[in-house]
Structure formats: structure tokens, C-alpha cells
Image 1 (cartoon, each protein chain N blue to C red):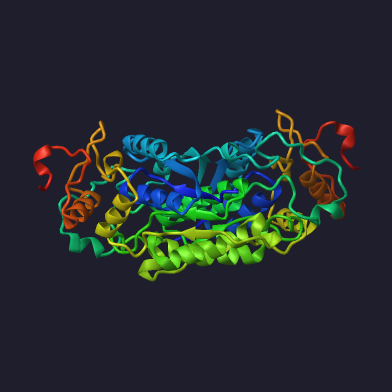
Image 2 (image 1 turned 45 degrees about the vertical axis):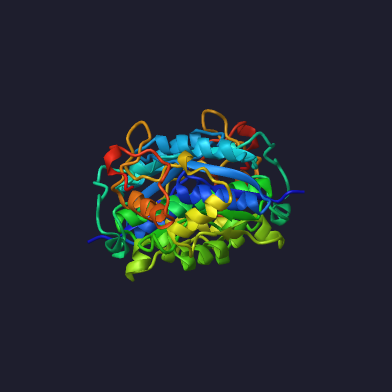
Length: 235
Length: 235
């Protein structure tokens, strides 16, 4: 029987590559996406496109509203930083950090894993480019895994413990793109931007866009995603 | 400045007593209740009554739907067990167990704690009466705390680590009731039943009702909650 895995899927470059990796390892992929009050519904559309294109066994959409807690540019009206030097992204915790977001995401994934009888959750976090996010650090993921093993039926009944797989953890953006392209990922389907237009075009100026563009440039490639205005796309 | 605490509040006997304990220790209590597709909306009403009666600083209601994952009598159409011997409740994991429920609840509480600058979350779990639930065990709570300290801004910036307080953990139901009454809790406001009527009357036969009724009986008291049919209430 094919082993099932839960894959956290935002529809961005990282989670899409992570889905491709899970599938390449032979997992039956159950994708889960969260509509949590992020400002851009177009993210959900990207996740739907990707799940469909990759043939995920299921695509679950979970709704809740993190805006009621406030506290991040991604869910409230704070300004998303634009065009700041890449080096400065490593300084402190960015305003785009959403409190406990990965913890909430992983907890829903854990519930689904338990119901499906899956022992593996894939998450596309990255400790290099997002070093400022507390919940992207390896020690956080290990602690989550430890907790999850005690949280569930499997933990009580002595079955195989849950594993959190974060295959991109130590990869640069350029390496992630290389890996995804080798697996046949069509990155034109993905949306990475923190501040996209209503029709799903990327801004080209936020941290996420800058890192993504740099990753493609380092591979000598042009990002196939749609940007606006067009003149801002590096050649 | 008064210290803030997040209190998980279902409106049942345990979480209500936990709220009373948090307030008695001088915390400014921020209550959080989850509407997660449980079959009884009357639970939410009980939580509202309790939060209002106790003067919680805020009462946050978080909506999501755990029914989409299925897997428990509390969220799907499985039969809630009735009139089973109390001793058998300790055998294995009850069908009323909801996968990863406390993990999801605590994760939202963690997000709110981080936004409010609170370092304390109160949860009314009990390891004696609910020994069958993996996520009510002390080792689970310790692992959650450990994970939470790494998950948040405070963990990165070396501030005070988050504490999960579970003051009822080692108490019997009779002791919980005693403690609550000493703190002036009006238990007629609370709803504990797994299978209440649409107007909020308890069934008197599910595990939760049986444990609650036994707790009052051991204190030589009559449970002030409304039961139906009336003839099933022990004298």
C-alpha cells in the first residue's frame, strides 16, 4: 500500500517544490491549504492549480481567521516591506511573521494525519532564507515532532511516531528551484509574493519576490511567474 | 500591570473552574472558545454565559470545521457511549476523542498569547478522569510547552518562555467541584454533556455526565445543571 503523507501547500515556490519531492519519493500526497485571512485569495487559487496539476490524492482547504488576533503584515494592514536589501532580511523577525502560524498549520495537518493513518507531514520551511521566523528553525520542528508523538493515538498505542519532513530546510532558493525543475515543476503555476495584485501578479519588490527572483537569476533563468509592472522583472 | 493569561473555555465544568482559578490568582483572563463543528451550539452559549458572569477581559470565538477531517463522535455521527461503567472509561481511547483537538486549541491560544504579550495559557485538562485522551497527559503538556517556547518571537528574543498551566491535571472531579465552589463558581451556568438537547439540557448518560454527577454526589451535592428527562438525575 502506498504510504500517505500530508503536504502543507500554500501554492508558493517552496511548498510546491516540497509537494513534488513528496510525490517523487512515492508518497500518496494529501495537500492541505489554509485560508486564514491572508489578504490575497489568489494564493488559494495558486494552491488549487498546483494540487490539480500534480495529481494530489486530495486537496483540503481549512478556513479560519487569524486577523482576529492581528499582529502581522500578512493578515492586517501593516505595510509589506519593499525593495529592502536581502542582507537586512536576516535582522530580527520580519513584520510579515504571523504569530504561531506554522504551529497552527501543523496542528491541523496532525489531525488529518491521525485520521488518515499517515505518519508523515511535509512542510516547505526554509531556515536559510527565513532565518528570522522562529517557527522555521530546525529546533522548532524537532520539538513539534516530539510533541506530536505524544499528542496522538499513535503515541499512546506505541505505533510509528509522526515525522515532520522539511526537505528544503537547509537549501538556498537557487537550490530549491534547481531541485524543483529537475522534478518537472512548472513554476508559472506558483505564487510567492506577499503583496500580489487581485489578478495574481507578483509585486516583484517584497522580500519573497526578491528572494525568488534572485534564486532564478542564480540559475541563469527568468522566473516564469507573472509580475507587474512588467518593467520591474530582472532580465 | 496585571499579567494577562489566555484561558481555554468550553463552558464545561472543568474549563469554568480553570477560569475561576486563573482569576483567583490575579490574572487578567482572556477567554478563547472554539466552534469547531461540534454538534452542539449550546456549548458556545454556555461559554458566553460563563465568560460574561466571570468578567473575562475578552472572549474570543474562533471558528473552523474539524468535521472535514471526521474521526470522532463529537464531530461526526458516531454514537456517544451511554451509561457505561465508569471503570471502562479508562480502557483505551474513547470514541469521543477528537484527533489533535487540544493541539489545535493550544496553537490558537499560542498565537493570541504572542499578540497580547501573555506568557501563560490555562487549560482545564484532567489526567485522572480522561486518562484515555493522549492530549490530556502531563508529558504531552510539557512537550507542547517546550515546542511553544521555540515557536514564538519570545523564544527567539530570549524573553520569558510560555507556560501551559493545567491546574486540574491531578484532581478528581469531586475535588474540582470543591475547588470551584470555594471560588464561588455557579455550576448551573456550565454545560458538560457530550450529547445535550438543543435547548442545552444534559443527557445524564454520557461519560462526561456520569463523571460530573459522580463528582457532585461525592460532595453530597445535587448538580445544579439542567438534565433531561428529569427522572434520571440522581438524588
